[in-house]
Image (tube, rainbow, N blue to C red; front, side, top):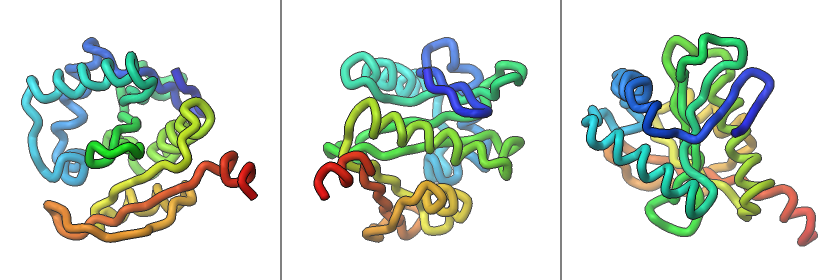
Length: 173
């Protein structure tokens, strides 16, 4: 479990499927997260199962995001996954449009990035953002991430960002 000033993040589990389906099927959410694809029930279960396996074997995956003091409903997700099946981890997040504009996506993403640095000890965290996704571009920039390359994507150019682990940078200086 991860806790921030306003959010509680808990690893996704099978019981989150229905709420997750509602969130990830909203057109505004899936536009950039899944390149507009509507996920089947089977694919959502597969993603939850993979996250559970990742937590069991590597101590990372996707967290369900809920507001502290709220009604307990899932308002988003945040997590870590391997970028393009490579060795480095990418921070990913989604948030219910009803919660946009309150800084919650950035708060959840920051908690996950801190976890990657402090618990997993990774050297850097990556993000892959569609060039047209101005809200997510703002989130990763507020996290202190910097662009390092642009690659082709389904919806057009995608910008890769990175943030170095400040604890490891300080140790090597």
